[in-house]
Image 1 (tube, each protein chain N blue to C red):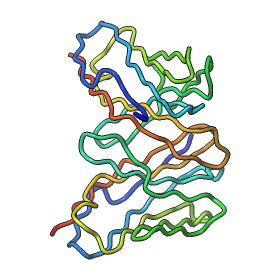
Image 2 (tube, rainbow over the protein chains, first blue to last red; image 1 turned 180 degrees about the horizontal axis):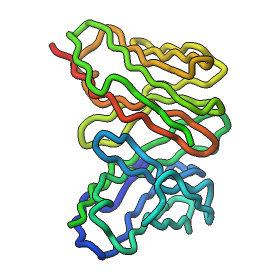
Image 3 (cartoon, helix red, strand yellow; image 1 turned 180 degrees about the vertical axis):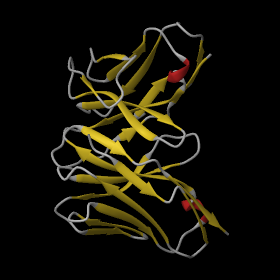
Image 4 (cartoon, rainbow over the protein chains, first blue to last red; image 1 turned 90 degrees about the horizontal axis):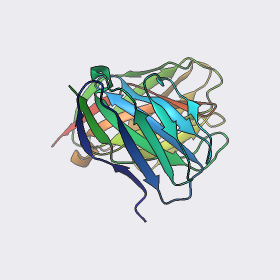
Length: 114
Length: 110
């Protein structure tokens, strides 16, 4: 049982390049989330999904796209990377819940855009 | 949207002392308040949580209190140990979204 895994762990991009971050979970969770973590700003929600084939915008969605074609995978795409997207990206998953439920986080992807 | 504020940003305590981290939130509809611990180079991990219908919850050396009227909640760690050193985040849930505080870097001095 690997929990939540993220690929890749590190990446350096040049401005304007594109890339996709992959998140996979083996806990059969319905909900999945993408966050970014910047110094002094905590974690901010980019996009989330409440089930296969569904996605929704979070607090900071601009410049990112997501897809949830399979229940266990949640992809985060950057079509044209910008230096402002330099950050650590975390994926999380959870069971569907009413009134609260634990999110399980992956180990993170450190992205640098030059 | 929800706004979560967390204080202090850094906290140093002697081993064995208590540590208290405080958070406030703005949206009265928020109904779930988890606390996460993040060690260097790792993802956050849930350590304790509380729902809006509960005022206090305790798990061994860790406790959380919630004051819905004042819209604030606090994390209390007693008998701190060096392995408690980490960054702690509070969060508030509204609908399907979680809003996080900016984190507290706790250092426990042996």
